[in-house]
Length: 229
Image 1 (tube, rainbow, N blue to C red):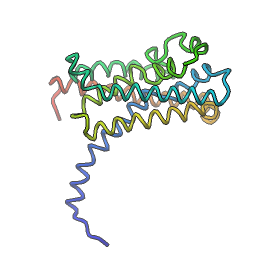
Image 2: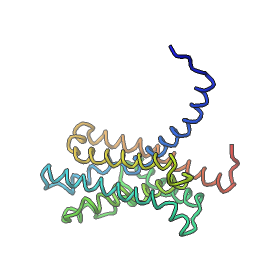
Image 3: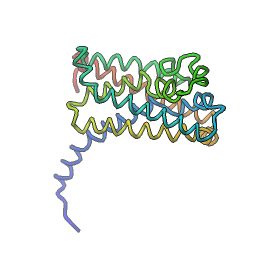
Image 4: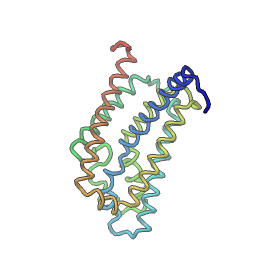
């Protein structure tokens, strides 16, 4: 049995803890805001007359659009901050406000108007590229998800740091999960039921409200209005 130095183990834990925390924060915030489970109803309405293969194509196109949009904002985030002179605290406060609005709607088990405007589903049924608009944008990659990615990018010190890897990895996982959830929307709704989906959306909404408050606290702390602990 190999002997390990307790001090070295403790040091490694200290070093990896921020990585784990940031990765969990990135995945949870992006996934909860994309929230493919809440889009199941609209997806089934859009694809009501489509056969299974066509549904999978639309789901794939929506997930791919979500991935491209969020990845684009992740890679261009630092440039956007510099171009418009936006500070991280300002975006944390603005992002927190958007997340709060979406989270409160999710607590009532309904889609936020920032993700799905009235009439989007009806108009999408007549579109050939409904997988791109409105499914990919804004139902999946809406203002909330984009804002969350931008805030996370603002917290990453550089483009090629591990934080950026965690953000991009979270986007990949979220886009893949969105495809599988929507491609099997009938099965998911049968297994969970309408009540199960509403409960799941409410739980995500509660966590999202807590995340929004954390963004507010981070923004106020970065502005110096709340002392660092």
